[in-house]
Every structure is written in structure tokens, then in C-alpha cells.
Image 1 (cartoon, helix red, strand yellow):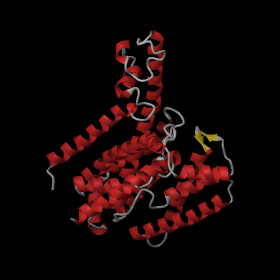
Image 2: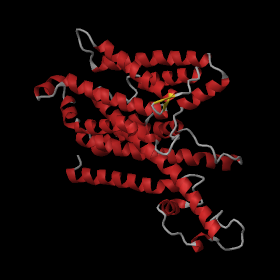
Image 3: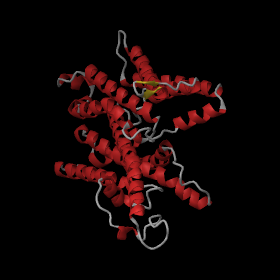
Image 4: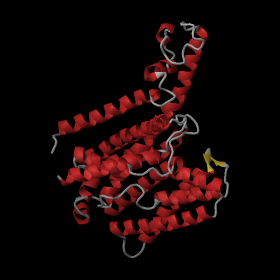
Length: 373
């Protein structure tokens, strides 16, 4: 087992990697390749850029006279600022989503004592997707408190499914963790059947929108649109990390945890409620993004061990790193594909859910092989 010093060194390395990725993110992507991260930051912070520095930059010398005029410098700076305003909010949104899904996945794997548990285990993704599909099918385009009807319907659908699972849990005998898992999977399958029904009765244009939404997206409609999730995800981050000691006792068994002063029903209810609200908020805003909540907690457990006091913050940090890197891949893959196929695909962006699946499946198999050893 790593020593406490090694734990903090590794956590510090994850945090440092996250800061480096945030700094580099404005320069990543096909459209940002001509500017680079340093120029975008300097333009955004209104730091001076000398004309001589831009002589060999593609697209800077517009008239090809070998000099950079003040107009060309102003155009370069304005374009760099525009890229910064688009790229950094997207990276911050990827950070929020990655932290939330990885942290909730780690908590659910502990709470349900199941290594295959994810933030979507209780049917949040299926319920949210069903709500979004209904809104797309019937053309609900209005906004509710600044949130589109599709996002509001997805949020309501996710909460409704988890509410149905909790309604089953009420009664003379509390449902066990495995029974809650089965209830969540069953509700998810029921929602999937209704989603297929909605898809069948939709037009071609609506089917395209439905499929596109189901792939997940990190495209913010507004520069600060990701801030709408903060009231849901920030309390979950703080309270779940502070529940680490109680979760450590819970892993030993309900009876032993209760003997050590842990209220097991209260712990389960609070953790499920926090994870549900945070995951429903992410799903409503970005659609279902798979494999983050499954792969990253296993990666964190392999690096940091199973102590929840280190596992939960490590999962959160690694989740942010993982999704930012996947988003970089989504920005660059289409440009590489266009170059290979000799087609103009650089302006397209691969859905983030496709990238997380392409990366998550082989990574998870590699983790399984490593754990077997």
C-alpha cells in the first residue's frame, strides 16, 4: 500500500495535470492550431503581442507583403480571443462533467458493493433520455427558467425514474443494495423500450436530433451555460467527499457500520439523492456520457487503493483529466479523418460519448487484465 506521503504526491500530480490541461486547452483543436495556447491566453488577457512574432504564423499575414500591419495584428488578436471564449468554457464544462460522473460512479460502486455500478445504474440516463426524446418528438422549444424544454424534460425524466425506484424501496422491508440495482436496471430497460417507441413514431429529422442527443455533447450554448449545473454538482462534490469516512465503515457491512455510529439508511439516502441530482443535471445539460463513471473509479482504485478518503478525491480529479482528454480527441479526430479520407471534415466535432466509449472499453479491459495480475 502507498504511504500517506505517496498518496498526496499522486493527488498533487493529478491536480497539476488538470491545471496544465486547463492552460493548454484554448490552443487545442483544428481552428486553434494556427494560434496556440500561449497566443490565445495573451489575447484574452490583453497582453502585448509583437507583430514580428506573427510573421511566420499561417493566416496572420493576410496580404502576403512580409509584414504584419496593425489591422492584421488586430484581426489576429480578435480571432484568438474568439477561440479562447469558445474553447475554455467547453473545457470547464468537461471538467465539471468528468468530476461529477467519476465521483458519483465511485460512490455508487461503494454504496451498492458492485464494481459495475455507474452513475446511471438507477436508470437516470434512461429516464433522462426518455424525457429528452419526448420533448424532441413533440417539438417543445420553449425555455423554463433559462433551461431549454429538452434539458428540463431530461432532468424531470431522470428524477422520475429514481423516484419510482425509491417508491419500490418503501414498505415493511427496506430494499437491499442488490434489489435497488435490479429495480434500477428494470426501470432502465422499461424506459429504453419507450424510447424505441418514440423513435419509431418520429420523423427523419426528429430521429437525427434524437440520435445526436443520445451521443452526448459538450457544446455549450452560451459561454457560461455550464454554470447552470453548479447548484446541483457543487453540493454533491463537497458532501460526498466528506462522507468518505462513513463509506469506509459501510464497506465493512451494515451491522458493523451501525455499531460504529453510522446511520446506514441515512447514508444511503443522502448519497443516492446527491448523486441523483448531480447526474440528472449533467444528463439534462450534456446527454448521456458513458464509461466515465465506470472506468475512472477503477483507475483511481488501482493507483490509490480502496480507502474512500483518497479514492473519492482521486476519482474526481482523474475524471476531470479523462474527460478533458477525450474532449481534445473529439476536437481533433475529425480533422485527422478528413486528412486521411481527403475530405473537409475539420469543422465537424465527434460526439463526446463516442470518444469515451472508444477510449473507455479498451482501457477498462486493460484495467481488468492488470487487476488479474
